[in-house]
Image (cartoon, rainbow, N blue to C red; front, side):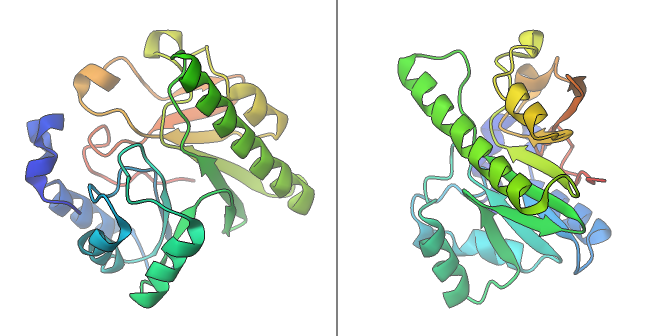
Length: 222
């Protein structure tokens, strides 16, 4: 992970956050477990400068699955990223990008998401993100039917504001494919997530899993 000093503007509780995360991780994760990281993994601007961060992940137990966040400027094509992993022998790391992953009779998929209720350009990106998610959910359903539970992970919150979380442009898509659990990140600091709690909407359970919201403890997905 990047040095703590670059994260401090999110709050003083970020001091030594990498140690807090690693301690929680090592106490809870076995080599056969899967850990999902919903974005903002590295401050690096290009893939070649992420080695310190990937080394940090590689030295922790379990399989790791990364989703793109809004600060992951190093993120590139899936082929290039997988080639990078292979060339550095990072064998227990992979990415969610226009694909899905099967683990313990569950299917994990997702998308970065985008700003809801923004400008016209934001609406275009939001439509694209919704289309990507629906395409993956459609592919999963065609392959597995309804026999496996689908878990969706996003970076951006799937609603506009905490006070108006019923304005959720993803809920119809998730409901269509019988998704019951959606996990998301992006929000940091008490001011950002202060009024947000885990909640259920239209039969779908939504959970915020930003690192500081969880006090840098890993969240178990059951």
